[in-house]
Amino acid sequence: MMASHSDATDSYLIRPNPDDPRLSAAVAGTDQSGRPVDLSVVIERPLTIFLNGQEIVTAMTIGDYPAELAVGYLRNQNMLRADDVITQIDHDADVDVVVVRTERETDFEDKLKKRTHTSGCAQGTVFGDLMEAVEDIVLPPAELRTSWLRRLTHAINTTPSLYLRAGAIHGCVLAAGARPLIYTEDVGRHNAIDKIAGFMFLKDITAADKIMYTTGRLTSEMVIKTAQMGIPILISRSGFTSWGVALARQTGLTLIGRARGKRFIVLAGGDRLVDDVTDAEVMEASDDDDG
Amino acid sequence: MMASHSDATDSYLIRPNPDDPRLSAAVAGTDQSGRPVDLSVVIERPLTIFLNGQEIVTAMTIGDYPAELAVGYLRNQNMLRADDVITQIDHDADVDVVVVRTERETDFEDKLKKRTHTSGCAQGTVFGDLMEAVEDIVLPPAELRTSWLRRLTHAINTTPSLYLRAGAIHGCVLAAGARPLIYTEDVGRHNAIDKIAGFMFLKDITAADKIMYTTGRLTSEMVIKTAQMGIPILISRSGFTSWGVALARQTGLTLIGRARGKRFIVLAGGDRLVDDVTDAEVMEASDDDDG
Image 1 (cartoon, chains in turn cyan, green):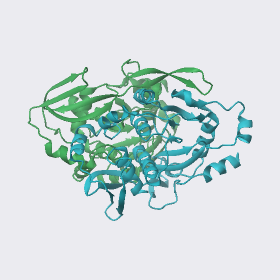
Image 2 (cartoon, helix red, strand yellow):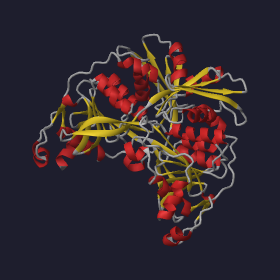
Image 3 (cartoon, helix red, strand yellow):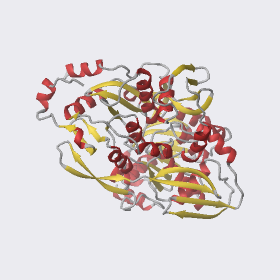
Image 4 (cartoon, rainbow over the protein chains, first blue to last red):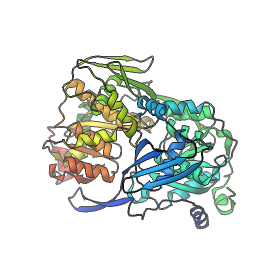
Protein backbone atom coordinates (compact mmCIF):
# COMPACT_ATOMS: atom_id res chain seq x y z
CA MET A 1 0.00 0.00 0.00
CA MET A 2 2.63 2.54 1.00
CA ALA A 3 4.80 1.66 -1.97
CA SER A 4 1.91 2.10 -4.35
CA HIS A 5 0.93 5.39 -2.70
CA SER A 6 4.47 6.68 -2.80
CA ASP A 7 4.92 5.64 -6.45
CA ALA A 8 1.73 7.40 -7.39
CA THR A 9 2.49 10.68 -5.66
CA ASP A 10 6.04 10.65 -6.98
CA SER A 11 4.66 10.48 -10.51
CA TYR A 12 3.34 14.06 -10.48
CA LEU A 13 4.72 16.61 -12.92
CA ILE A 14 2.39 19.20 -11.45
CA ARG A 15 0.54 18.87 -8.16
CA PRO A 16 -1.43 21.21 -5.91
CA ASN A 17 0.55 23.47 -3.62
CA PRO A 18 -1.82 23.99 -0.67
CA ASP A 19 0.93 25.81 1.24
CA ASP A 20 1.14 28.62 -1.36
CA PRO A 21 0.07 31.67 0.70
CA ARG A 22 -1.46 33.34 -2.38
CA LEU A 23 -4.04 30.58 -2.85
CA SER A 24 -5.83 30.51 0.48
CA ALA A 25 -6.36 32.81 3.41
CA ALA A 26 -7.52 32.56 6.98
CA VAL A 27 -11.03 33.90 7.46
CA ALA A 28 -12.30 34.55 10.95
CA GLY A 29 -15.77 33.22 11.69
CA THR A 30 -17.68 31.95 14.68
CA ASP A 31 -19.16 28.52 15.21
CA GLN A 32 -22.67 27.63 16.47
CA SER A 33 -21.56 28.33 20.04
CA GLY A 34 -20.23 31.78 19.20
CA ARG A 35 -16.62 30.63 19.55
CA PRO A 36 -14.20 32.25 17.11
CA VAL A 37 -12.82 29.89 14.47
CA ASP A 38 -10.13 30.52 11.88
CA LEU A 39 -10.95 28.88 8.57
CA SER A 40 -8.84 28.36 5.51
CA VAL A 41 -10.62 29.60 2.39
CA VAL A 42 -9.64 29.65 -1.24
CA ILE A 43 -8.94 33.06 -2.74
CA GLU A 44 -10.54 33.92 -6.10
CA ARG A 45 -9.18 36.68 -8.28
CA PRO A 46 -9.92 37.92 -11.79
CA LEU A 47 -7.59 37.08 -14.67
CA THR A 48 -8.11 38.83 -17.98
CA ILE A 49 -6.91 36.84 -20.97
CA PHE A 50 -5.68 38.58 -24.12
CA LEU A 51 -4.85 36.89 -27.41
CA ASN A 52 -2.55 39.04 -29.57
CA GLY A 53 -3.82 42.32 -28.18
CA GLN A 54 -7.50 41.35 -28.22
CA GLU A 55 -9.23 41.05 -24.86
CA ILE A 56 -10.99 37.68 -24.82
CA VAL A 57 -12.39 36.99 -21.36
CA THR A 58 -12.05 37.68 -17.65
CA ALA A 59 -12.06 34.49 -15.63
CA MET A 60 -12.33 34.17 -11.86
CA THR A 61 -9.50 31.90 -10.79
CA ILE A 62 -7.35 30.97 -7.81
CA GLY A 63 -4.51 32.48 -9.82
CA ASP A 64 -1.89 29.72 -10.01
CA TYR A 65 -0.63 28.83 -13.50
CA PRO A 66 -2.08 31.88 -15.32
CA ALA A 67 -0.15 31.11 -18.52
CA GLU A 68 -1.43 27.54 -18.60
CA LEU A 69 -4.98 28.66 -17.84
CA ALA A 70 -4.87 31.23 -20.64
CA VAL A 71 -3.41 28.84 -23.22
CA GLY A 72 -5.76 26.02 -22.21
CA TYR A 73 -8.80 28.31 -22.29
CA LEU A 74 -7.91 29.59 -25.76
CA ARG A 75 -7.19 26.05 -26.95
CA ASN A 76 -10.44 24.62 -25.56
CA GLN A 77 -12.38 27.48 -27.15
CA ASN A 78 -10.75 26.69 -30.50
CA MET A 79 -9.23 30.16 -30.59
CA LEU A 80 -5.78 28.61 -30.51
CA ARG A 81 -5.23 25.86 -33.09
CA ALA A 82 -3.27 22.68 -32.44
CA ASP A 83 -0.57 23.86 -34.89
CA ASP A 84 -0.38 27.44 -33.63
CA VAL A 85 3.05 28.62 -32.51
CA ILE A 86 3.05 30.66 -29.31
CA THR A 87 5.76 33.30 -29.52
CA GLN A 88 5.33 34.86 -26.08
CA ILE A 89 3.23 34.73 -22.92
CA ASP A 90 3.29 37.74 -20.60
CA HIS A 91 1.68 37.65 -17.19
CA ASP A 92 1.32 40.90 -15.30
CA ALA A 93 0.32 39.95 -11.77
CA ASP A 94 -0.23 43.58 -10.74
CA VAL A 95 -3.14 44.07 -13.12
CA ASP A 96 -4.19 40.39 -13.35
CA VAL A 97 -3.64 40.20 -17.09
CA VAL A 98 -2.09 37.49 -19.23
CA VAL A 99 -1.30 38.03 -22.91
CA VAL A 100 -0.74 35.11 -25.29
CA ARG A 101 0.97 35.97 -28.58
CA THR A 102 1.00 33.70 -31.62
CA GLU A 103 2.78 33.67 -34.97
CA ARG A 104 -0.57 33.51 -36.72
CA GLU A 105 -2.62 36.70 -36.72
CA THR A 106 -5.93 36.22 -34.92
CA ASP A 107 -9.16 38.19 -34.94
CA PHE A 108 -12.10 36.84 -33.00
CA GLU A 109 -14.46 39.76 -33.45
CA ASP A 110 -17.08 37.47 -35.05
CA LYS A 111 -16.54 34.69 -32.57
CA LEU A 112 -16.85 37.04 -29.62
CA LYS A 113 -20.09 38.41 -31.05
CA LYS A 114 -21.41 34.89 -31.24
CA ARG A 115 -20.51 34.30 -27.59
CA THR A 116 -22.85 37.10 -26.68
CA HIS A 117 -25.73 34.82 -27.53
CA THR A 118 -24.49 31.51 -26.24
CA SER A 119 -22.46 32.15 -23.11
CA GLY A 120 -23.83 32.56 -19.64
CA CYS A 121 -25.22 29.05 -19.70
CA ALA A 122 -25.15 26.88 -16.63
CA GLN A 123 -21.63 25.75 -17.38
CA GLY A 124 -20.45 29.19 -18.31
CA THR A 125 -18.96 28.57 -21.74
CA VAL A 126 -19.66 28.62 -25.42
CA PHE A 127 -22.08 25.76 -25.73
CA GLY A 128 -22.98 26.33 -29.37
CA ASP A 129 -19.37 26.33 -30.49
CA LEU A 130 -18.54 23.26 -28.44
CA MET A 131 -21.45 21.29 -29.89
CA GLU A 132 -20.22 22.00 -33.40
CA ALA A 133 -16.75 20.80 -32.50
CA VAL A 134 -18.01 17.43 -31.26
CA GLU A 135 -19.19 16.12 -34.62
CA ASP A 136 -15.75 15.39 -36.04
CA ILE A 137 -14.20 13.85 -32.93
CA VAL A 138 -12.75 10.35 -33.28
CA LEU A 139 -11.19 9.05 -30.07
CA PRO A 140 -8.36 6.49 -30.16
CA PRO A 141 -8.51 2.94 -28.81
CA ALA A 142 -7.22 2.71 -25.25
CA GLU A 143 -7.27 0.54 -22.18
CA LEU A 144 -8.58 1.24 -18.70
CA ARG A 145 -7.69 -1.43 -16.18
CA THR A 146 -9.92 -1.68 -13.15
CA SER A 147 -6.80 -1.89 -10.95
CA TRP A 148 -5.77 1.56 -12.25
CA LEU A 149 -9.12 3.01 -11.26
CA ARG A 150 -8.66 1.89 -7.70
CA ARG A 151 -5.05 3.00 -7.35
CA LEU A 152 -5.61 6.28 -9.19
CA THR A 153 -8.53 7.36 -7.01
CA HIS A 154 -6.56 6.39 -3.89
CA ALA A 155 -3.51 8.36 -5.05
CA ILE A 156 -5.60 11.45 -5.88
CA ASN A 157 -7.62 11.33 -2.66
CA THR A 158 -4.46 11.19 -0.54
CA THR A 159 -2.54 13.91 -2.41
CA PRO A 160 -2.28 17.11 -0.34
CA SER A 161 -4.53 19.68 -2.04
CA LEU A 162 -6.43 22.90 -1.56
CA TYR A 163 -9.55 20.74 -1.51
CA LEU A 164 -8.31 18.87 1.56
CA ARG A 165 -7.14 22.12 3.15
CA ALA A 166 -9.96 24.54 2.39
CA GLY A 167 -12.68 22.74 0.40
CA ALA A 168 -15.00 24.59 -1.99
CA ILE A 169 -12.82 23.88 -5.01
CA HIS A 170 -12.75 21.56 -8.02
CA GLY A 171 -9.87 19.37 -9.13
CA CYS A 172 -8.87 17.77 -12.43
CA VAL A 173 -6.11 15.20 -12.87
CA LEU A 174 -4.40 14.02 -16.04
CA ALA A 175 -3.19 10.46 -15.52
CA ALA A 176 -1.26 7.78 -17.36
CA GLY A 177 -2.62 4.47 -16.21
CA ALA A 178 -2.68 4.49 -12.42
CA ARG A 179 -0.15 7.35 -12.26
CA PRO A 180 -1.43 10.91 -11.78
CA LEU A 181 0.68 13.37 -13.78
CA ILE A 182 -0.94 16.82 -13.61
CA TYR A 183 -3.32 17.76 -10.79
CA THR A 184 -4.88 21.22 -11.06
CA GLU A 185 -7.50 22.90 -8.90
CA ASP A 186 -9.71 25.96 -9.29
CA VAL A 187 -12.99 27.49 -8.18
CA GLY A 188 -14.55 26.38 -11.46
CA ARG A 189 -13.87 22.96 -12.93
CA HIS A 190 -13.56 24.63 -16.39
CA ASN A 191 -10.48 26.42 -15.16
CA ALA A 192 -8.99 23.24 -13.72
CA ILE A 193 -9.41 21.36 -17.01
CA ASP A 194 -8.30 24.39 -19.04
CA LYS A 195 -5.06 24.51 -17.03
CA ILE A 196 -4.44 20.87 -17.91
CA ALA A 197 -5.08 21.66 -21.58
CA GLY A 198 -2.57 24.49 -21.27
CA PHE A 199 0.10 22.24 -19.76
CA MET A 200 -0.51 19.65 -22.47
CA PHE A 201 -0.18 22.27 -25.22
CA LEU A 202 2.91 23.94 -23.76
CA LYS A 203 4.70 20.69 -22.84
CA ASP A 204 3.48 18.84 -25.97
CA ILE A 205 1.94 15.99 -23.96
CA THR A 206 0.08 13.37 -25.99
CA ALA A 207 -3.60 12.82 -25.19
CA ALA A 208 -4.34 9.42 -26.72
CA ASP A 209 -2.81 7.37 -23.89
CA LYS A 210 -4.09 9.50 -21.02
CA ILE A 211 -6.99 9.49 -18.59
CA MET A 212 -8.85 12.54 -17.30
CA TYR A 213 -10.14 12.50 -13.74
CA THR A 214 -12.41 15.17 -12.29
CA THR A 215 -13.85 15.70 -8.83
CA GLY A 216 -16.90 17.40 -10.32
CA ARG A 217 -20.04 16.29 -12.08
CA LEU A 218 -19.82 14.76 -15.53
CA THR A 219 -21.66 17.51 -17.36
CA SER A 220 -21.91 17.88 -21.11
CA GLU A 221 -19.18 20.50 -20.96
CA MET A 222 -16.65 18.27 -19.19
CA VAL A 223 -17.37 15.45 -21.63
CA ILE A 224 -17.02 17.72 -24.67
CA LYS A 225 -13.79 19.30 -23.43
CA THR A 226 -12.19 15.94 -22.62
CA ALA A 227 -13.19 14.47 -26.00
CA GLN A 228 -12.08 17.62 -27.79
CA MET A 229 -8.69 17.35 -26.09
CA GLY A 230 -8.40 13.83 -27.57
CA ILE A 231 -8.42 12.04 -24.20
CA PRO A 232 -10.40 8.78 -24.54
CA ILE A 233 -11.29 8.20 -20.86
CA LEU A 234 -13.04 10.45 -18.32
CA ILE A 235 -13.53 9.45 -14.68
CA SER A 236 -15.33 11.27 -11.87
CA ARG A 237 -16.03 10.59 -8.24
CA SER A 238 -19.28 12.52 -8.70
CA GLY A 239 -22.50 11.99 -10.62
CA PHE A 240 -23.44 12.76 -14.20
CA THR A 241 -26.11 14.34 -16.36
CA SER A 242 -28.07 12.79 -19.22
CA TRP A 243 -26.37 15.01 -21.81
CA GLY A 244 -22.97 14.15 -20.43
CA VAL A 245 -23.72 10.46 -20.93
CA ALA A 246 -25.30 11.01 -24.36
CA LEU A 247 -22.33 13.04 -25.59
CA ALA A 248 -19.85 10.47 -24.27
CA ARG A 249 -21.67 7.76 -26.24
CA GLN A 250 -21.76 9.98 -29.32
CA THR A 251 -18.04 10.75 -29.22
CA GLY A 252 -16.97 7.25 -28.18
CA LEU A 253 -15.59 8.45 -24.84
CA THR A 254 -15.24 6.00 -21.96
CA LEU A 255 -17.20 7.60 -19.12
CA ILE A 256 -16.93 6.38 -15.52
CA GLY A 257 -19.00 7.98 -12.76
CA ARG A 258 -19.21 7.65 -9.00
CA ALA A 259 -15.69 6.23 -8.88
CA ARG A 260 -15.03 5.48 -5.20
CA GLY A 261 -12.14 3.05 -5.21
CA LYS A 262 -13.60 -0.39 -5.66
CA ARG A 263 -17.01 0.80 -6.79
CA PHE A 264 -17.78 2.70 -9.98
CA ILE A 265 -20.37 2.99 -12.74
CA VAL A 266 -19.52 2.59 -16.43
CA LEU A 267 -21.76 4.90 -18.43
CA ALA A 268 -20.23 4.75 -21.90
CA GLY A 269 -17.33 3.15 -23.78
CA GLY A 270 -17.17 0.04 -21.60
CA ASP A 271 -15.21 -1.72 -24.37
CA ARG A 272 -12.02 0.01 -23.15
CA LEU A 273 -12.40 -1.50 -19.67
CA VAL A 274 -10.15 -4.41 -18.75
CA ASP A 275 -11.06 -6.13 -15.49
CA ASP A 276 -7.72 -7.17 -14.03
CA VAL A 277 -8.86 -7.19 -10.41
CA THR A 278 -9.68 -10.76 -9.53
CA ASP A 279 -8.39 -10.40 -5.99
CA ALA A 280 -7.84 -6.99 -4.49
CA GLU A 281 -5.00 -8.04 -2.19
CA VAL A 282 -3.13 -9.80 -4.98
CA MET A 283 -3.56 -6.79 -7.22
CA GLU A 284 -2.30 -4.27 -4.71
CA ALA A 285 0.72 -6.39 -3.87
CA SER A 286 1.83 -7.48 -7.32
CA ASP A 287 0.35 -5.35 -10.09
CA ASP A 288 3.16 -3.71 -11.98
CA ASP A 289 1.77 -0.53 -13.47
CA ASP A 290 3.33 0.41 -16.80
CA GLY A 291 1.04 3.38 -17.38
CA MET B 1 -40.00 15.82 15.30
CA MET B 2 -42.67 14.54 12.93
CA ALA B 3 -44.92 17.49 13.61
CA SER B 4 -42.11 19.92 12.90
CA HIS B 5 -41.20 18.06 9.71
CA SER B 6 -44.79 17.96 8.55
CA ASP B 7 -45.29 21.68 9.29
CA ALA B 8 -42.20 22.53 7.34
CA THR B 9 -42.97 20.51 4.23
CA ASP B 10 -46.56 21.77 4.22
CA SER B 11 -45.26 25.33 4.03
CA TYR B 12 -44.01 25.03 0.43
CA LEU B 13 -45.48 27.22 -2.29
CA ILE B 14 -43.16 25.55 -4.81
CA ARG B 15 -41.26 22.34 -4.22
CA PRO B 16 -39.27 19.95 -6.40
CA ASN B 17 -41.26 17.44 -8.42
CA PRO B 18 -38.84 14.51 -8.73
CA ASP B 19 -41.59 12.39 -10.32
CA ASP B 20 -41.89 14.72 -13.33
CA PRO B 21 -40.82 12.44 -16.22
CA ARG B 22 -39.38 15.40 -18.17
CA LEU B 23 -36.78 16.14 -15.51
CA SER B 24 -34.93 12.86 -15.18
CA ALA B 25 -34.39 9.74 -17.22
CA ALA B 26 -33.15 6.22 -16.67
CA VAL B 27 -29.66 5.71 -18.04
CA ALA B 28 -28.34 2.18 -18.43
CA GLY B 29 -24.82 1.64 -17.09
CA THR B 30 -22.83 -1.21 -15.60
CA ASP B 31 -21.27 -1.41 -12.16
CA GLN B 32 -17.75 -2.52 -11.22
CA SER B 33 -18.80 -6.16 -11.59
CA GLY B 34 -20.20 -5.63 -15.07
CA ARG B 35 -23.77 -5.95 -13.81
CA PRO B 36 -26.27 -3.71 -15.63
CA VAL B 37 -27.67 -0.90 -13.47
CA ASP B 38 -30.42 1.57 -14.27
CA LEU B 39 -29.63 5.03 -12.94
CA SER B 40 -31.78 8.09 -12.65
CA VAL B 41 -30.08 11.12 -14.19
CA VAL B 42 -31.13 14.72 -14.55
CA ILE B 43 -31.91 15.91 -18.08
CA GLU B 44 -30.38 19.20 -19.26
CA ARG B 45 -31.86 21.11 -22.17
CA PRO B 46 -31.19 24.51 -23.72
CA LEU B 47 -33.55 27.42 -23.09
CA THR B 48 -33.12 30.57 -25.14
CA ILE B 49 -34.37 33.70 -23.38
CA PHE B 50 -35.67 36.67 -25.36
CA LEU B 51 -36.54 40.09 -23.94
CA ASN B 52 -38.91 41.99 -26.23
CA GLY B 53 -37.68 40.33 -29.40
CA GLN B 54 -33.99 40.56 -28.51
CA GLU B 55 -32.18 37.26 -27.96
CA ILE B 56 -30.37 37.53 -24.62
CA VAL B 57 -28.89 34.17 -23.67
CA THR B 58 -29.17 30.41 -24.04
CA ALA B 59 -29.07 28.67 -20.67
CA MET B 60 -28.70 24.95 -20.04
CA THR B 61 -31.49 24.04 -17.63
CA ILE B 62 -33.57 21.11 -16.42
CA GLY B 63 -36.49 22.93 -18.03
CA ASP B 64 -39.04 23.29 -15.25
CA TYR B 65 -40.33 26.83 -14.64
CA PRO B 66 -38.99 28.41 -17.86
CA ALA B 67 -40.97 31.63 -17.33
CA GLU B 68 -39.62 32.05 -13.80
CA LEU B 69 -36.08 31.26 -14.92
CA ALA B 70 -36.30 33.83 -17.72
CA VAL B 71 -37.76 36.57 -15.53
CA GLY B 72 -35.34 35.85 -12.69
CA TYR B 73 -32.35 35.78 -15.02
CA LEU B 74 -33.32 39.12 -16.58
CA ARG B 75 -34.01 40.59 -13.14
CA ASN B 76 -30.71 39.39 -11.66
CA GLN B 77 -28.84 40.76 -14.69
CA ASN B 78 -30.53 44.13 -14.15
CA MET B 79 -32.12 43.90 -17.59
CA LEU B 80 -35.54 43.89 -15.96
CA ARG B 81 -36.09 46.69 -13.43
CA ALA B 82 -37.98 46.31 -10.17
CA ASP B 83 -40.74 48.58 -11.50
CA ASP B 84 -40.98 47.02 -14.96
CA VAL B 85 -44.41 45.74 -15.98
CA ILE B 86 -44.39 42.37 -17.74
CA THR B 87 -47.15 42.30 -20.34
CA GLN B 88 -46.69 38.75 -21.61
CA ILE B 89 -44.50 35.65 -21.25
CA ASP B 90 -44.56 33.09 -24.07
CA HIS B 91 -42.86 29.73 -23.71
CA ASP B 92 -42.54 27.56 -26.81
CA ALA B 93 -41.46 24.14 -25.54
CA ASP B 94 -40.94 22.81 -29.08
CA VAL B 95 -38.09 25.19 -29.82
CA ASP B 96 -36.98 25.76 -26.21
CA VAL B 97 -37.60 29.49 -26.33
CA VAL B 98 -39.14 31.84 -23.77
CA VAL B 99 -40.02 35.44 -24.63
CA VAL B 100 -40.56 38.04 -21.89
CA ARG B 101 -42.37 41.22 -23.02
CA THR B 102 -42.42 44.43 -21.01
CA GLU B 103 -44.28 47.74 -21.24
CA ARG B 104 -40.96 49.56 -21.30
CA GLU B 105 -38.94 49.33 -24.49
CA THR B 106 -35.59 47.65 -23.92
CA ASP B 107 -32.39 47.55 -25.92
CA PHE B 108 -29.39 45.79 -24.48
CA GLU B 109 -27.08 46.06 -27.47
CA ASP B 110 -24.47 47.87 -25.35
CA LYS B 111 -24.93 45.63 -22.36
CA LEU B 112 -24.56 42.48 -24.45
CA LYS B 113 -21.40 43.88 -25.99
CA LYS B 114 -20.02 44.40 -22.53
CA ARG B 115 -20.82 40.79 -21.63
CA THR B 116 -18.50 39.71 -24.39
CA HIS B 117 -15.61 40.80 -22.27
CA THR B 118 -16.78 39.74 -18.85
CA SER B 119 -18.75 36.53 -19.23
CA GLY B 120 -17.31 33.05 -19.33
CA CYS B 121 -15.88 33.46 -15.87
CA ALA B 122 -15.82 30.61 -13.41
CA GLN B 123 -19.33 31.36 -12.30
CA GLY B 124 -20.61 31.98 -15.79
CA THR B 125 -22.17 35.40 -15.43
CA VAL B 126 -21.57 39.05 -15.77
CA PHE B 127 -19.10 39.65 -13.02
CA GLY B 128 -18.27 43.24 -13.90
CA ASP B 129 -21.89 44.29 -13.93
CA LEU B 130 -22.63 42.50 -10.68
CA MET B 131 -19.72 44.17 -8.90
CA GLU B 132 -21.02 47.59 -9.90
CA ALA B 133 -24.46 46.71 -8.57
CA VAL B 134 -23.12 45.82 -5.12
CA GLU B 135 -21.97 49.29 -4.15
CA ASP B 136 -25.44 50.71 -3.48
CA ILE B 137 -26.90 47.73 -1.65
CA VAL B 138 -28.30 48.34 1.84
CA LEU B 139 -29.78 45.24 3.43
CA PRO B 140 -32.55 45.51 6.02
CA PRO B 141 -32.33 44.48 9.68
CA ALA B 142 -33.54 40.92 10.22
CA GLU B 143 -33.41 38.05 12.67
CA LEU B 144 -32.04 34.56 12.26
CA ARG B 145 -32.83 32.26 15.16
CA THR B 146 -30.53 29.30 15.62
CA SER B 147 -33.60 27.07 16.06
CA TRP B 148 -34.74 28.05 12.56
CA LEU B 149 -31.39 26.99 11.14
CA ARG B 150 -31.76 23.52 12.56
CA ARG B 151 -35.38 23.03 11.54
CA LEU B 152 -34.91 24.58 8.12
CA THR B 153 -31.97 22.37 7.16
CA HIS B 154 -33.86 19.33 8.45
CA ALA B 155 -36.95 20.24 6.43
CA ILE B 156 -34.93 20.84 3.26
CA ASN B 157 -32.86 17.69 3.61
CA THR B 158 -35.97 15.52 4.00
CA THR B 159 -37.98 17.12 1.16
CA PRO B 160 -38.24 14.78 -1.86
CA SER B 161 -36.09 16.29 -4.60
CA LEU B 162 -34.23 15.57 -7.80
CA TYR B 163 -31.07 15.76 -5.69
CA LEU B 164 -32.22 12.85 -3.54
CA ARG B 165 -33.44 10.95 -6.61
CA ALA B 166 -30.67 11.56 -9.15
CA GLY B 167 -27.95 13.72 -7.59
CA ALA B 168 -25.70 15.99 -9.68
CA ILE B 169 -27.93 19.02 -9.20
CA HIS B 170 -28.01 22.22 -7.13
CA GLY B 171 -30.87 23.47 -5.01
CA CYS B 172 -31.91 26.88 -3.67
CA VAL B 173 -34.62 27.49 -1.10
CA LEU B 174 -36.36 30.71 -0.16
CA ALA B 175 -37.50 30.49 3.44
CA ALA B 176 -39.44 32.51 5.99
CA GLY B 177 -38.00 31.68 9.37
CA ALA B 178 -37.86 27.90 9.67
CA ARG B 179 -40.42 27.43 6.89
CA PRO B 180 -39.19 26.68 3.36
CA LEU B 181 -41.38 28.43 0.78
CA ILE B 182 -39.83 28.01 -2.68
CA TYR B 183 -37.42 25.16 -3.42
CA THR B 184 -35.92 25.15 -6.91
CA GLU B 185 -33.29 22.90 -8.45
CA ASP B 186 -31.15 23.05 -11.59
CA VAL B 187 -27.88 21.87 -13.07
CA GLY B 188 -26.39 25.26 -12.29
CA ARG B 189 -27.02 27.02 -9.01
CA HIS B 190 -27.41 30.31 -10.95
CA ASN B 191 -30.51 28.87 -12.57
CA ALA B 192 -31.91 27.67 -9.24
CA ILE B 193 -31.52 31.13 -7.66
CA ASP B 194 -32.73 32.87 -10.83
CA LYS B 195 -35.94 30.80 -10.72
CA ILE B 196 -36.50 31.98 -7.15
CA ALA B 197 -35.95 35.58 -8.26
CA GLY B 198 -38.50 34.97 -11.02
CA PHE B 199 -41.10 33.64 -8.58
CA MET B 200 -40.47 36.57 -6.25
CA PHE B 201 -40.93 39.07 -9.09
CA LEU B 202 -44.03 37.42 -10.57
CA LYS B 203 -45.74 36.76 -7.21
CA ASP B 204 -44.55 40.02 -5.65
CA ILE B 205 -42.91 38.31 -2.68
CA THR B 206 -41.04 40.60 -0.29
CA ALA B 207 -37.35 39.91 0.25
CA ALA B 208 -36.56 41.74 3.49
CA ASP B 209 -38.02 39.08 5.80
CA LYS B 210 -36.73 36.08 3.91
CA ILE B 211 -33.75 33.70 4.08
CA MET B 212 -31.92 32.19 1.11
CA TYR B 213 -30.56 28.66 1.46
CA THR B 214 -28.32 27.02 -1.13
CA THR B 215 -26.82 23.57 -1.39
CA GLY B 216 -23.82 24.95 -3.27
CA ARG B 217 -20.71 26.85 -2.38
CA LEU B 218 -20.96 30.43 -1.15
CA THR B 219 -19.22 32.03 -4.10
CA SER B 220 -19.06 35.74 -4.81
CA GLU B 221 -21.85 35.31 -7.32
CA MET B 222 -24.27 33.70 -4.89
CA VAL B 223 -23.55 36.39 -2.33
CA ILE B 224 -24.01 39.21 -4.84
CA LYS B 225 -27.24 37.78 -6.24
CA THR B 226 -28.75 37.25 -2.79
CA ALA B 227 -27.79 40.74 -1.66
CA GLN B 228 -29.00 42.25 -4.92
CA MET B 229 -32.35 40.51 -4.44
CA GLY B 230 -32.61 42.28 -1.06
CA ILE B 231 -32.48 39.10 1.02
CA PRO B 232 -30.46 39.74 4.20
CA ILE B 233 -29.48 36.15 5.08
CA LEU B 234 -27.72 33.46 3.03
CA ILE B 235 -27.14 29.92 4.33
CA SER B 236 -25.31 27.00 2.74
CA ARG B 237 -24.55 23.45 3.72
CA SER B 238 -21.33 23.80 1.69
CA GLY B 239 -18.14 25.81 1.96
CA PHE B 240 -17.28 29.33 0.89
CA THR B 241 -14.70 31.40 -0.94
CA SER B 242 -12.77 34.41 0.32
CA TRP B 243 -14.57 36.77 -2.07
CA GLY B 244 -17.91 35.39 -1.03
CA VAL B 245 -17.09 36.24 2.57
CA ALA B 246 -15.60 39.64 1.69
CA LEU B 247 -18.63 40.64 -0.37
CA ALA B 248 -21.02 39.50 2.35
CA ARG B 249 -19.18 41.72 4.85
CA GLN B 250 -19.21 44.62 2.37
CA THR B 251 -22.94 44.38 1.68
CA GLY B 252 -23.93 43.62 5.27
CA LEU B 253 -25.27 40.17 4.41
CA THR B 254 -25.50 37.51 7.10
CA LEU B 255 -23.52 34.58 5.72
CA ILE B 256 -23.69 31.10 7.25
CA GLY B 257 -21.62 28.23 5.86
CA ARG B 258 -21.33 24.52 6.51
CA ALA B 259 -24.81 24.47 8.01
CA ARG B 260 -25.42 20.88 9.07
CA GLY B 261 -28.26 21.06 11.51
CA LYS B 262 -26.72 21.83 14.92
CA ARG B 263 -23.36 22.90 13.57
CA PHE B 264 -22.68 25.93 11.39
CA ILE B 265 -20.15 28.69 10.80
CA VAL B 266 -21.05 32.39 10.89
CA LEU B 267 -18.89 34.22 8.37
CA ALA B 268 -20.51 37.65 8.25
CA GLY B 269 -23.40 39.60 9.72
CA GLY B 270 -23.45 37.71 13.01
CA ASP B 271 -25.46 40.59 14.56
CA ARG B 272 -28.66 39.15 13.02
CA LEU B 273 -28.18 35.83 14.82
CA VAL B 274 -30.38 35.13 17.85
CA ASP B 275 -29.39 32.06 19.83
CA ASP B 276 -32.68 30.62 21.05
CA VAL B 277 -31.43 27.06 21.39
CA THR B 278 -30.48 26.54 25.00
CA ASP B 279 -31.64 22.94 25.02
CA ALA B 280 -32.22 21.07 21.78
CA GLU B 281 -34.99 18.83 23.13
CA VAL B 282 -36.91 21.74 24.67
CA MET B 283 -36.63 23.69 21.43
CA GLU B 284 -37.89 20.91 19.20
CA ALA B 285 -40.81 20.18 21.48
CA SER B 286 -42.00 23.67 22.26
CA ASP B 287 -40.63 26.27 19.83
CA ASP B 288 -43.53 27.93 18.09
CA ASP B 289 -42.21 29.17 14.79
CA ASP B 290 -43.87 32.31 13.56
CA GLY B 291 -41.63 32.68 10.50
